Amino acid sequence: MEFQRARRPEQVEQRRRTILDTACSMLRDRRVADISLRELSERVGLAKSNVLRYFDSREAIFLEVLDEEWGAWLDQVEADLASADGAVDVASAIAGSLVRRRLLCELISGMAGVLERNISVDCARAFKRRATARTARLADLVRARVPELDDAAARHFAGVVLVLTAGLWPHANPTDTVAAVLAELGAPPADELFRDGLTEGLVNQLVGLVARARAADA
Image 1 (tube, helix red, strand yellow):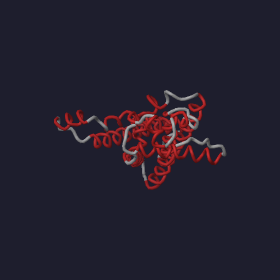
Image 2 (cartoon, one colour):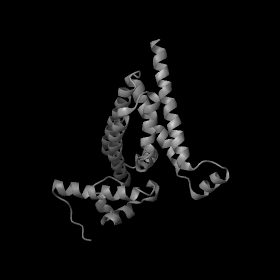
Image 3 (cartoon, one colour):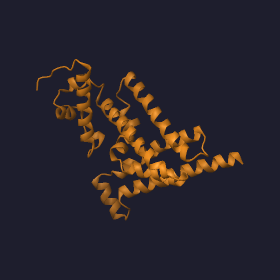
Image 4 (cartoon, helix red, strand yellow):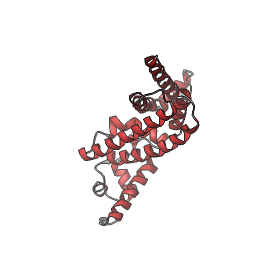
């Protein structure tokens, strides 16, 4: 395919959208580490150098996908929390919503260690500003349902949601060898370990923050 540079703003946006949609499709059933820029470029129908006209790097593409998934997840969390009552309900609802979003968990798990390692300052600045806004929105949603928390505690919890997800997700996707050994040992399936570990961790964290806030007010 002969490359034709997109010149008008709508053409540039269309080309970027095609790249992002292709990346998202590939990530639906594959790990970030298994997708190269070369393969992504071939799927889009462009040379690597032409894909890099629109994004800094492979990592910058995946960060953009992460940001979009993050926003969509928060919309769902807002709906899920509408009927939540108290810290246990709130934490359980957030954990459950993450368990249902494999792509988001995969990208969160690679965010700090992989995706933020090969990007420009401008890309890092734009992503971190949006990530900060996303975290603040989650904190606001939690605080609306758990009024005992102050802003600092709610933001702390929102950060813990990311850290626990990033730490637990790789264990939910073991290699075939490790999965076989876990089965021999009688361990629950990896996806159950992720679901239960995330739920327990977030419930304990939020209940603990509420208890601390009540003790401080006593």
